[in-house]
Length: 238
Image 1 (cartoon, rainbow, N blue to C red):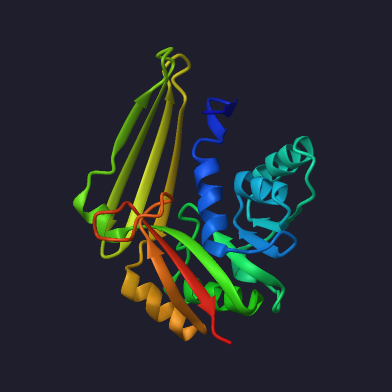
Image 2: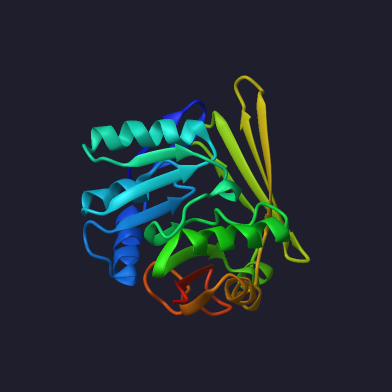
């Protein structure tokens, strides 16, 4: 695993990237030179590896700090990627991309109406018969499993706790980082709408998208209530 640290915690990790990118390319079946939008690309780890394979990549994220790292890493990798700071609710493309990808539970942070509107904007951004690949947490799996986690740095200096509460389809994720030397606590809270597969199918249908396949992991396993992920491949209706 390769990672870097900024401040007190890991922020850039390449763990799993090769398998994930291999899955993305196998599922999308695009040719080099075709255009892909990495919607909420984060640090750009998927975007960079896809660009290395010859795809024309645009990466959008709402956080400038993430994009700064993505730009730096793309320059180090000597690949050309268009990175743009933009809220996904403000997508304004029309039939530009052969595919749009949205990885690692980067969807569901707005109201139901806004989330549905984002999917319509994605559909608009796709070329006719374009593909949309979205990676979500599996709500059915979350209900059955304890997602709370606790890590201690080998040095004993830092402790990271991660707590997830799921109620009525709303997942509240609380992360706390404690520096045991300085006593400084850093807390984050994220609220995510965890959708079921039927709910996503309805949103897609209303946006002119049809589901082609649903996977439970980047190893290509089929989706079920026992898989942690719900990765949906959809196609824009022609």
